[in-house]
Image (tube, rainbow, N blue to C red):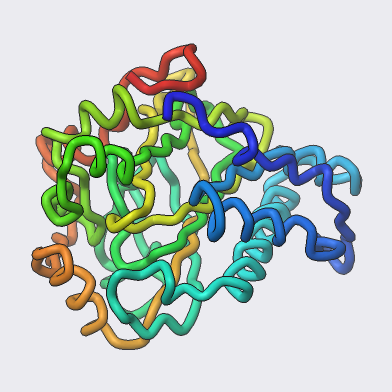
Length: 300
């Protein structure tokens, strides 16, 4: 998977939109149809780009934070419409009573607080976005909206075809992953991650300085795709840096549902600490893929 299949790349500017009362709306169902076809019925991933051109068509500028917020809301509305069309239970290996899609805005470069959208996790916990090869816990279908970055180089989304790796290496899903000590996510074990990054991964070729990008992903250890990120760094270390991310996931009302998901993979529910990880954990789980090559976006 050194190159993402070309039909997973969706130019959203090719689809009609309306801008009414400060909100951007899709006209017709064609774009959501495409997301359903690619993610729920096809490759399990869709990369939506061209949002800056969509904004420009309505006289809006992606570098204006208010206009960028309009774009994020628009992309979120597409994922929510996608969710209305898809039976989420068909993508979960465990019967979980998903009852909503929730979103959170984080900075993918700096430390975050008060990022959580519900009462299941403490809002006092410090948070750093995970950039190793990982899965988000108990949410079979996810969307991540990236950009536009401020004073950042790198930070490209990386998609990992772990289902092909499991088949080729004859590894079981439960043996692929480990608990992360400072997160509810699960990481692909280092013994598997190196080969996955070398032979089963692709970085999305997107311009996060001048565009917003949404990646919709079948995110499940059983039969889905893992994700990661190349290492983001400041262009000018003396200036502020920001890497906006909006994460969208399926959630449920009862925290006991979370335990069922972990038990399926022979894991305990983690108890993340309140402070950001120590240096060793930071290097392991938050460092990011160190180098992304030029051969079709293959991470090294």
